[in-house]
Amino acid sequence: MISPHFDVVVGGSRAETLARGSNIRAVKFQGLVKVLATQGTINSRSTQYRACSVYVHAIPGIDNVLILSVSGFGQVYFVAMGLTGIRTAMKVDRNKPAGEQNGLHNRWHPDIPSCATVKNGEVVKIECVDWTGGQIKNDDCADDMRDIDLTRVHYLTGPFEIETAQPGDVLLVEIQDVQPFQDQPWGFTGVFDAKNGGGFLDEHYPHAAKAIWDFEGIFCSSRHIPHVRFAGLIHPGILGCAPSAEVLAEWNRREGELVTTHAHLDRVVAKPPEPVNVHAGSASGDIKAKVGREGHGGNCDIKNLSRGSKVYLPVHVAGAKFSVGDLHFSQGDGEISFCGAIEMAGVITIKFNVIKGGMAHMGMKSPIFHPGPVEPQFGPGRYLTFEGFSVDHTGKQHYLDATIAYRETCLRVIEYLRRYGYDDYQIYLLLSCAPVQGHIAGLVDIPNACTTLGVPMDIFDFDIRPESEVVKMDMGSCAYTSDKMNK
Image (cartoon, rainbow, N blue to C red; front, side, top):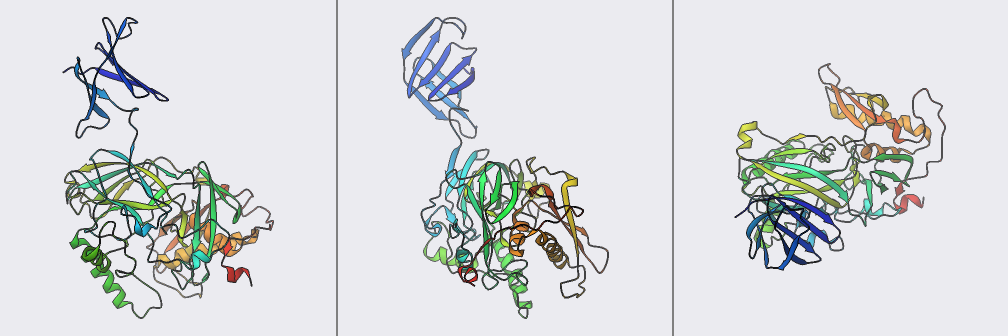
């Protein structure tokens, strides 16, 4: 067996491979494969064409390398990079209900069957529906946002079995790219009705509303929030590995206890397992019913998990059972309106690597991530930053309550931006999906937590600096429900 080095040149339907240091040259043209034998150097013009039989074999565990068997010449290593594209590990059908697709699921549970297998070290593309499974439409009415069925959401693509992954390992997920589908270059941001989901500011803004965003390359703009344009920080809202039965039981125990001890509150503090409209991929019967009784809906929504990011996930079950979905074109820190990113359907490209024994080595109890180098560049001096404290809108003092502080910070921004002609719902939606920077500034100066919210001034096509003149403009309207529009 000889092992020459190959260069790959690809042009249209023609692919040419040169073997340096050998007398073999393989040429593939529109499906016709022949071998060219040379008597001198590889650059020799003196060649002899010879028909031959060619067989291609994969080498287990080695990326982008195939064995090319050529009759009369034995076997040579054939580097296939450029000749073979990245495979799509799972496709979705956007014209079919998400709950009828075996490659999707909407609960976390170890018994959901894997939909496909990915090799350790492999790069794959994974298609995802939007998190609602297509319930929200590109129109100017928010009835769909008001009437959304929240038992039919958070559809993830997966689970994928990652070869060699075992409990105690760490799955390194490298996000290489995320893109919307080419024939669906739009997304949506929404506010749910307070009686059906609500949001971070639902005491102030209880009605359903939405904004549609159109994508133009890396930028987006909305007919429902005019005079705004910004580059997206595109990312998955959800990615993770399946919990073990023990981990899942602990999640449900502690959250069930929270629900019981806070039953007096007029607010939902946690959601226990919900069997209604559970979707467990290809599972049916007893397994599907079990997933409905026990399944969890965990979600993190971290906007910085964008292209180039590395995410280190604990593995709790054999094969890891990795899932991903809830793709976002952009999101602000906090995603305050709940349906608050620019939600979209699309394709994510991921490389998987298993780190054996990684949980013990890293002392890992929860995921770790390394942000990628790609994000909108506004500069530290281009954020207009607002402060909030642990004093609610009634004037009541709270003790080191960062949630109250951040809510008040958001309200300060809404009060500021409405001076330019936006209505409050437009600003609420914008703060939820634009690349705003939210921070906890302090948690030690009792009784107040201090939070900040930085708004990038350059997303507007007018000057919002405090010293600038305030010119009130006609900002149109976001999409409201039909009953609200008819009043």
